[in-house]
Image (cartoon, rainbow, N blue to C red; front, side):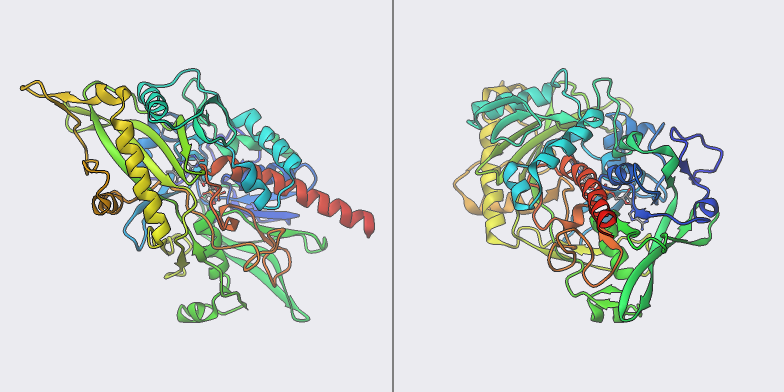
Length: 518
Ligand SMILES: Cc1cc2nc3c(=O)[nH]c(=O)nc-3n(C[C@H](O)[C@H](O)[C@H](O)COP(=O)(O)OP(=O)(O)OC[C@H]3O[C@@H](n4cnc5c(N)ncnc54)[C@H](O)[C@@H]3O)c2cc1C
């Protein structure tokens, strides 16, 4: 399919595909990637500084796959052909994942569940709790909606969790609370998705340019008196097909390039720019700018075990509305329903229950094996390699078995001619005997998947400092899910959008401090 052309009307006056024009001036901040973190960060910085966002994907607005609830499943099925809104990749472990390739990033292609990280996580990140709360509220004003009703599958899940003892019942809340809760969705009650791109409504339109269909290939630097300074980025535009360079305002000492290209994209861009483990870079003939051995190391993705039950009655396709949080927040039980078109007359309705190990100890690594920024690097998460993760996964399978044994799930059984009723599974059946550890472990391995909450690789300390500035380089920060060593536990988008806003405010504060002391 064709890339966007300049005559498409965008809802924001500052969105453009005119690469030449966008690159013809300098900016205080160049943000690479307009995803969950990049959009709120850009909107916030534009209140005081000039900002360019360079996003490889197109606009999410007017795209029914992005904007409607049913689109989510289509995205998962169709994620492949360039330049579709999602890009499929398969990890070295063999798990199929996708990445957003559209303004809004993951928030434009995800399962929409909106839930804040726990107070404990916020404290462990060293974040200021007051500013965190204000930043969450800022996001939620535009992007978080209380569902006015639960769909049949979500109701069964909620009631089943309560019957199975995942207590207390916390009702509707965006807070992280142990027990069973309904949380917000980034779909509103008319079924319209609100991506992180909506947070650009907060931007100062005179101070921001959002360039679409433009893929950054590397960061540009100058080196003076032994210092490495980021000065801009090089990108290619899908519209004019040529390379462009764009620079930060080098007269201002505080201008920066900020990577918000997501866990895969930000690690990849550091490596493509010569910042990373020197041996790996040399193997690809990339000139080493800075040997930073931990770039791409320690990445992680919470493993998921799941069961797919066929439903005897139609179920609407819906994303996640309910979560059971248990075992000291180590386990998250969530579910959704979808349908499969077998042929014109036969539609299969499926309810999925997934159990996620929230804080896995297994770690992996990301390596580039191509110098083409459009090619997803090779990633290995080593899912379930740590015995702790397997143990937690097995516990999750027991919970799912208890859940399906509750009254609330009996209506999903099929009755046979001899009047016996059984579940029909799409994929592996839940183990019959929950005390057989081997069966439980096999179920974890056979159904191994992901809710796409992968993160890490630019960890605080080893790659970036506590303000997310890349160690050993001036004017370069990373602000997105790649800074998380541990996952936010819950589904990460709320925390990552909050992080964009939070860091924007922090940068403005740093600048004010700088101006008032200089
Ligand atoms: C299928 C799926 C379902 C999910 N379900 C949920 C859910 O229900 N709830 C939840 O909380 N979270 C969910 N998530 C996770 C959540 O969406 C992500 O954690 C979050 O979007 C990550 O934010 P980020 O800012 O780190 O990266 P992203 O949001 O991925 O943003 C990165 C952006 O950078 C752009 N980019 C990358 N490389 C380049 C480059 N070289 N040049 C220019 N631009 C570039 C990308 O196109 C993208 O727009 C899901 C994710 C997926 C993929």
